[in-house]
Image (cartoon, rainbow, N blue to C red):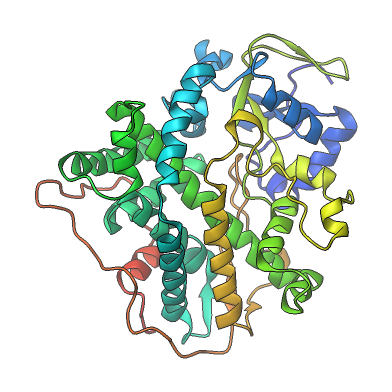
Length: 443
């Protein structure tokens, strides 16, 4: 197969129904990396080998995160309305920075996240999870993606970053469209509009929140840098965490050995999540890096300079998931997966994500012990994002339960009179909007 001939279409439903089959074809034909089509007309490479990802992520001389090196984009070969631009075009934030600039921006992020009161956020997360379950427990059925997995991280990140309810709903709706590569330009504009309004409010009235801490950090971030870091961090805190929760619940409901390991006490929730991160992680082709010069591959192919290289964490993890480890021999989880990244760009908020996900699962399994999948596992539909893997819906049924809380642990808030919410380009999904405004709904 000639260099640059796409070997897989990452946007195709067939890929998302069985990505591991495609990964194996790539290994057999190409080895560690293969040319792919990210969306129609947008070429790239997918690296799927565990050791190769580690080596390339640590090789900051050969590979850059700066998307301005993307040769097809520079040469006008990528359409201005390409759906993947929202996730791939350069932004002045830590994800797209190298060297000293990366260190400056990362300090601002890690210092601001380090000021979070873990005990307060942990307690809030637990109360929010209980309240969300109260909102569905009497019904005997729910869509756990839309009514639980996507909502809990949203509520927590709203609190951490000082977003109000309206801003949070608009943010996650636009973010989902951008990750799915749906009308990326409008989605990105909506994200930036939401965050600009939050920044304007925090300039007037700073608070005890991560947005205010980013703005006052000694790294002296500009408003544009603050904006782009909020798009990155809030987005990364909501969407992949929601997908991790959804993927974990699906595995619990469809893999009896996995579920028995949890219910019989042979595996705690934290270790169960590590298992999911090995076998079904939320990020399957992101982030992206760019070789600064041509890279020769073991099979004789050449990866041209400026090619977008998607980091295939799911494929790399799966290739190593069966290997024994000292941790597994001792009865604990092997945490050497790549799902939170590796090297200088390793995720700085993984502890927060794992806390949210583990709290979500513990509350769900305790409150709804009779939960069952309300559809055939083979009929579950996957989103077709080239970057992530998650279900569109996860319908479940369970014996109706009695709510346990008198009220939700948050209050609905409105925007100050001088900064109205604006008209969202992406109307919020009805179930999400309804759930946030009326958790104790009755049907």
